Amino acid sequence: MNIKHFLLSLTAIAFLNQAKAQELTLKTTPKGLAYHIFTANAGTKIKVSDVITFNVIQKTDKDSVLFSTYKNGTAVKLQVQPSQNIGDLMDIFPLLADKDSALVKVPTDSIFVGHEEQRPPFLGKGSSLVFILKIEKIQSVDEAMAERNAAMEKAKAEGLKLKAAEMVNLQKYIADKKIAAKATPSGLNYVVNVPTLKRKPLNGDTVYVNYVGHTLEGKVFDTSIESIAKAAGINQPGRPYEPLDFVLGKARVIKGWEEGFLLLHEGEKATFIIPSALAYGEQGAGADIKPYSTLVFEVELVKVKPGKHPVAKPAVKKKTTLKKPLKKKPVVNK
Image (cartoon, rainbow, N blue to C red):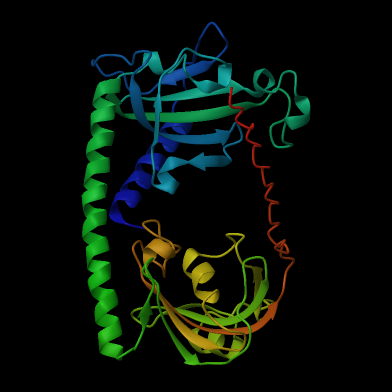
């Protein structure tokens, strides 16, 4: 847990302890929401259409915590709208100013009216959901949009830097390893290590492949081979370590695999060096595959199971209809 999340957690504990320690005087809204404002700052109150950022703890009336932004590390951000139902808290927000905190009790009977079958067992009839809120920021729509656009521009600039660095690292990897790779127009680099003269797969065929995937730094993140998984410390008990099968052309694997396996013959072993644009892009995938990560796969196309492919019909030649020549009328001399 980083220091920011640690401090937020301390804040959350303080609010919970405050709520337990005080004999709260609850007020009630016209719709039946009971609430208590812990702090009442003198700032401008929240207005409908404002964009607010707030932290929240949601718990049962028996103190079982169901959700906490302090634990998740990400506050809620939303635009305040006219209330649509008692549980949306939109009647509470206009009572609060920036940095205010409050406790709100929502009767569950009002939430599940008309659809009792959706009521979970831990929220019995007559119970309440308890929300402890802390307003962190209040913005107009224009201010929120400006902040969002600035964040997007910053992320775009950082992304361009990371992408440029990725290309440098990719080429350095190929040069340092002295890999005689071929490059496709999409950016896939590959080299066939063990060639064969068997058939190539087509889109619609099922391929069976063994693979080892690792980062440019050599960190193995996935494999279909159990001995390699054990050596890399990523063995998953119960997983069947065997060739992975999938249908080409169905977008069930990353783009680099879709393209790469169409280039191989059955039985061939190859190395794929796949840039992030053909893998997991700017999002990455888990702790090992960071954003803008080039991935290296040692692969073997074990087997190709042909799928059904439409049979091309021979072109039908159109019959040419010859027009009969026009008969010339005889010229009669008068």
